[in-house]
Length: 291
Image (cartoon, rainbow, N blue to C red; front, top):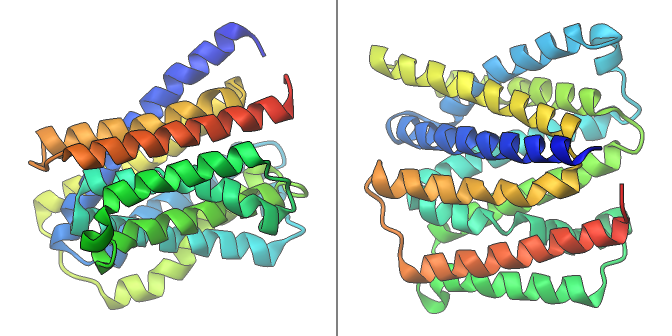
């Protein structure tokens, strides 16, 4: 992998985080007016069509993408991510983009903490120290004794835990299945599990809101496409720290476009958590050695 490829991958990751932050803002706007499950279901319909189209164009076609040695786990991964998206969008509605994303930033630390019991990986004292520091940041964000016991404050933390488990299971199935297979089952399983409750909770949508929904679907597909390209041209360990920029862009959108406030303690807690997460990613890269 050349340095030029890594630089391009970083720029593309920055663009990807901007796309996902914009997508989150639209999700929040729509879920404020309509049922969260319905909004996420429609997004997943488009996502499922996107992954089927991508699989059809890949070598081996759909048959290669469908083939898996861990069907149960692949379906569970897709269901878990769909649940995480619903929980996170609910967090956007309850807390806003700024605070919800600040808490979600803890997911790399949760991945590091759970990698031992789930994947059997060794977690050294330095990473445990970073995990502890990161959760100090989360406590700063949640304000112990004030909001930590509020169900609203715990919603994005539950989403972070679900996303961390999804990431670990993705690594686990990746030992036998291709990335294309995991991507296919993520979209299809998620759409399948969301459709029954989403149709049951269906609400008529105003004409202008369908335009927002269309924008949401297009941004979701574009973001996932860009993310695929990022990992095609650059090492994951090199570009992953830049994924934290989604917190920055989401906070900017929340403050300047949605009228949210960025409280000093939230900014401080997010900075602590992100710093600990970046250290953890750097340790992972060091342990893995040069590509």
